[in-house]
Amino acid sequence: MKSKTVFRFLSGGVLLALAAGCAWAQTQVDLRTQSKDVDFSAATSTKPFQTGAVLPGLCSRGQVLFKTDALAGANFYACTAANTWTVEGGNATGPTLGGNNAWSGNNDFTAAAGVSLPAPWVATTIANTYTAGAKQVFPPSATTAGLRIVGGSVPSAMTGGDLFVTATGLHGIFDGTNANLFPIVVGSGTTPAGAPSSGKCVEWGPGFSLVLAASNSACRSAPTSTDPVCMVTADIGKQWLDNTSSLTTHFKVCAAVASTPSWVTVF
Image (cartoon, rainbow, N blue to C red):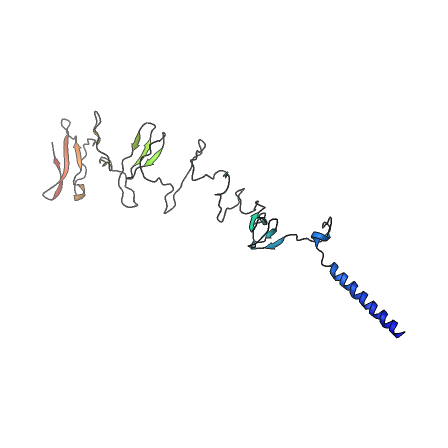
């Protein structure tokens, strides 16, 4: 009788152990081989992808990963070839150009098939034509100019209205037929030259020579009956066409006479 009781106890223990083993084995389900038509729609939450901030160095084709440090919309990576990860999202929601959003950081479009920039954005590597009347204003700051044209060789294929600066710093404009250069009034450092005083001739800039017109000289002093000032050393060199006399106009020069500036009649 005792032996039967012991046998029954041992048999019951074995069955319990087997049941416990089966119960533990059922918690280790291989979804690839042991599942069919899996439906997670009622699950509280699911995480079907491997996650990480660093793409593994080794991967096999078809492997996927959710990159946690990428911009939203560009987190999904797939292994498209052995040890090669490719972003599958592509629509990153980083800084945009729409509305009043600010653009920040470094943005590289070198691999883009094309880039369309909304007004007033312009590409700096191609020619841009503005709509008629769309005046562009380039105000300077306290230390930096608003616009700069780099000097160089005079362009050989210009259209009317083109501006240019020669290698020697002469400013010019093409009128549709000729490249015209402007004379330069030399300043001092960053201080521009002042406007010439009334009655004084302006010296032509580098590269220019005086050209006499058919009937008028390039520089003319208007006759006056009022004696200009000729009193200090700085006045020496002034010229005056004196028409005080109704019969004769005299050409006078302010010169040092016995160390004293005085008007001297030339003729």
